[in-house]
Length: 126
Image (tube, rainbow, N blue to C red):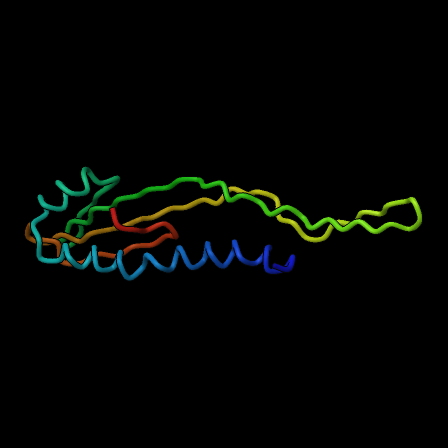
């Protein structure tokens, strides 16, 4: 594998992993539409926050975490001229911390979930 492929592969994998959960998460949220508010509370627990407006109650659940993404070592090439070696390094990515978060809000009207929405890069099935 070339150096550029070794550098690019972890980024592609991270991107695909975050996209793969979106359809599943949308299905989970849609499954609550029409269900009683108490069912949502039993499954999700107490919300991080809630507010009421114009006959609707909005229950918001938030999560966040930091994930360490390992780095990629540089490619080292050594060339010899006579008895002397010259080493050069190419590429490499240092390890980094990525913040992952998800905010999900359910709208409840007359004791039933009527809508939901979410934002974030770490929204997935519970």
